[in-house]
Image (cartoon, rainbow, N blue to C red; front, side, top):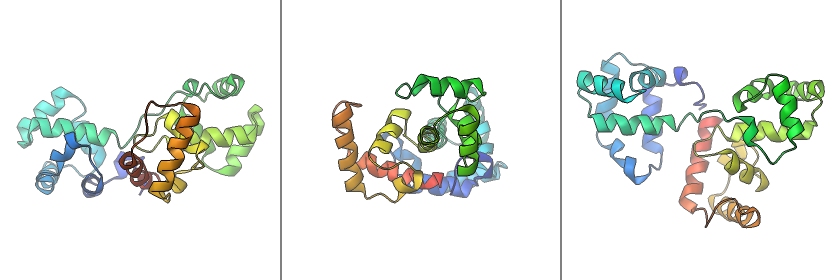
Length: 218
């Protein structure tokens, strides 16, 4: 299921994702009474993730909604933090400073400054090739950037993490979702050792979280 459009995701689907997610310890409290909470949300007239998002988008709204619904304020704070992570914000293409900057400049000159703008033009291969030819970018380079932008739709995948995934051979959300956890764990730590992207090692549990999160971008 594609979670890129909150207006299309029902509260039941959102609840089920929370239940299936390996939550970080500080958010495990969300599982306590979650069915009751979501029935309460429905009773408030909410039908979609977007409805909920609007109601708890800032501390003042959370406070007001907590009083109205009698759902614990801190629970709603944690709920907001969790579901915000399900829809990562687009990144500015300027942060991709490891590709030739004339490529980024050509994209900017054509009005493409962020990852979501890039994906809107390059979601289909034929359209991507036509766009690359139009603005004078190597097709393989545009493939790379489009794959990076797509991977960064996955929860916890930053541009640097996306770069590492591509270098490890997992350049699409489908490849990430179908990856063997142990193999990806070894590949990512090998890439990290070679490129020195992060200090220390990347945990197997974190890798498994990435794999699970990728299914919501298919």
